[in-house]
Amino acid sequence: MTTRDQQRRAVKAERGEAPPRSSAEPAPNLPERLLAARERKGVDLYRAERDTKIRARYLAALERGDYRELPGAVYTKGFLRNYALYLGLDPDDVLLQWRRERGDAREPQAVISTPKPIAAPRRGLTFSPSLVVFALLTIAVLAFAGYLAVQLLRFAKPPTIAVTEPATAVVDVDETATDYVLRGTTNPGATVSIATPGRDPYSVSADADGAWTSKVELRRGRNQFEVSSVDPETGKRSEQSVMLFITVPFLVIEAPTLTVDQPAEGATFENGAIPVQGMTTNAGSVVVTAAYVGPVKGSPTGGARPAVPDPATVKVGEDGAFSTPFELTAGRWTVTVTASSPQGKTASLTRAVAVEYKGVTLVVKVKGGRAWLKVWVDGKLDPDTGAAGRVVASGKTLTFTGKDSVEVRTGSSGVTFFTLNGTSLGSLGRSGTPETWLFAPPAPPTKTQHR
Image (cartoon, rainbow, N blue to C red; front, side):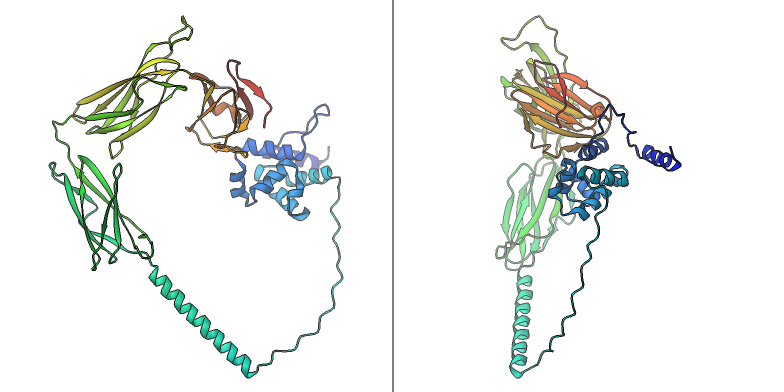
């Protein structure tokens, strides 16, 4: 082995490229090398497009070996060199393999074109009186058109919006207050819209001087209002909105109020992601708990009791709304929602629900690092991940539901955790290892070669 070969092998080892394969194992072709390197890097085609400035469809053509989709050999070589550097591959080795697989081991010879004779210069323009008149008329028409454009832009300028009462964006009022009068200015005749979460927006028109007034309803707690205006003649909305926060304090003796919209009493779910949502007032937090009652009708008996999930603490929005999915396994359950006020008073509601799995419900959670995912549901690509796959950040959870099967391709098996029909399977491989798993109960998960 020469010194040049030793240096080349050392450079490939630093870049993380695999050593040469033995003669018994065929070496991968160039498209397979590019695809494997991208999956090892943990990026999708659209992320690679942003990083390399090469269109995703050209990168996909390189990974399929469909060079007819590319602009030409010169661009193809440039794409391959830049993509190889981005993926940590030897660009000279990639270009050599590309030429070898095309059956052309040598660089194409440059084509020498014979220069064309220099054409005789054209005669210069002659200015006649009629040509001068035409030029002046053209300049006048263009000037008039520019004037009209400037006037149109001035006419279509977005309206302004300002709030004069209250004078500050954050206001605390008396605990007995039930409404507040807002005042401000905008363009004359403009329509002022005052949006608040959980309620229909208020609407009022400005007078001839641009002044407007509107009385808004207040609830206990923090009331949020977003004020904007629209010019009815041009349809233009104000470029900026004014945010107001008016707080009505709670009475110390007031207990929380609680309504639960979901789940409904006696509802049956085909997967374990039970939606829990509702409204509360004077509550600092909402806690969701569950108790196992027994198996659903028709299910086998004598099995072990399922594990009871830990209580879930749900954040209450500024408008008093709360919402969270609550994972339950198959069986009959009672779900209890408890709202607690800062003063220690509570309010609780209980709902009886049943979970009876049908088909395949697969919950995929990424923990400990990012993972590139590509999913097929009942043999068809899932639109959430798409044909190019999707990079999922650590801590994210995705749920897929199918009639017969769900198949998942992951770029890092060790950080991808699975829960199948309420049963936790954990991770099925090692971190950084690309693998494809087929989930088709009652059969156990099976590793496939689907890409």
